[in-house]
Length: 209
Image 1 (tube, one colour):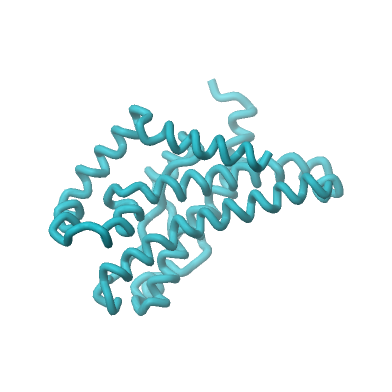
Image 2: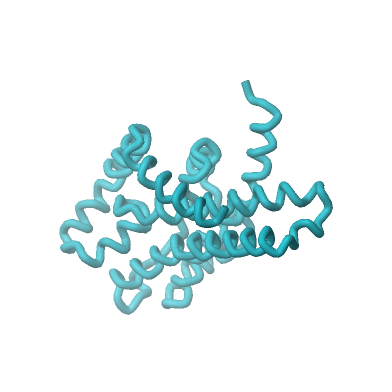
């Protein structure tokens, strides 16, 4: 049975979740645009409107796991890059990097706010929710960044790793990306993927708290 606390935690998760997914996808599109591909810009994906980026299954996955999931991929046309493989790798890396930057920012604000007692100046009704949302933002962005760096197509980590792989392997993986993705989902279900990510996050949480 869903408790009041479960509902409260979910409501506090929504703002960091929307912000994390939006910035992640916006970063992909913005970097692609700067590298010469206007596809995302032309399709209205260079926006802070989260509705333009949300993926139903990926969002549900985050709500269930609290730190792993995905958004709707930003369209990218590698033909617009001088070096398609390198361009795609840079665009892919932009998403997880944005999550790590947001995780670091959340941790710094949280640490400084507690250490300097700045949060104590806030009304009681804002004090606790703000701390919880900053902690969720830290955890969520770490999880999204680490998850998306896994070298499984169609995740960002595969695009980055593709620079080190023979072209024929890259084509093979892209052709059967749905098979690899299903395999990744099964690994998540067994805990093989989730367990090490949880341990990394738990260790880093201990440095913040």
